[in-house]
Image 1 (cartoon, each protein chain N blue to C red):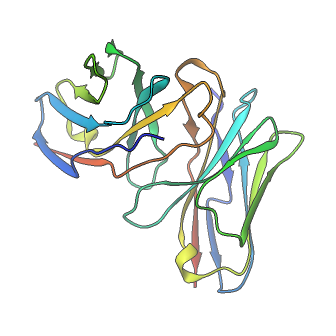
Image 2: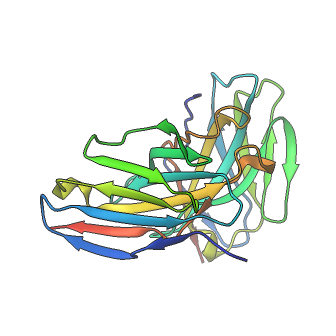
Length: 112
Length: 114
């Protein structure tokens, strides 16, 4: 399983765009990149997943460069309720979906 | 929509006692995962099941065991409890080969060992 590295914490203000970058230098060819959000005392919640280039949904965008050694989660116009921990996971969803390793996530704090 | 159900939501035990946590996955999901999250820590993968068979193991102590039953619900059995076992225990379910391999997490069971 590829190891991931994220910033420990980030601060932002309401209405700003937040970009959280995750490094995964030893990502394998079959690995996908998945991001989860977790609020205190709640289970993580799936945000977005991608393999390459750009993926967008109603919540966020995920940018993955051609070498796939990093990825950036982009949260547009954050609000106070986006204060949470964000986890980047890398794994083979075809064969490795049984063992999910959460690394140290990024604690995002959104201020008014 | 149905979500993952975990019971009990809160559990208080004494050291050296046993505890059983239950998880009811979303109907038709074929994979169940168990995680442990200590205070201020990140979720740690314990064990997973695919179609009722144990699939993978993470940092699960030998004092813990788990199984998935014919109705797909799963139980995490914890014996000889230690103070350090106090944590939130999450169960998640999903499709092994589903779109995005998304895992749906339950609300968790908060275990306190005194």
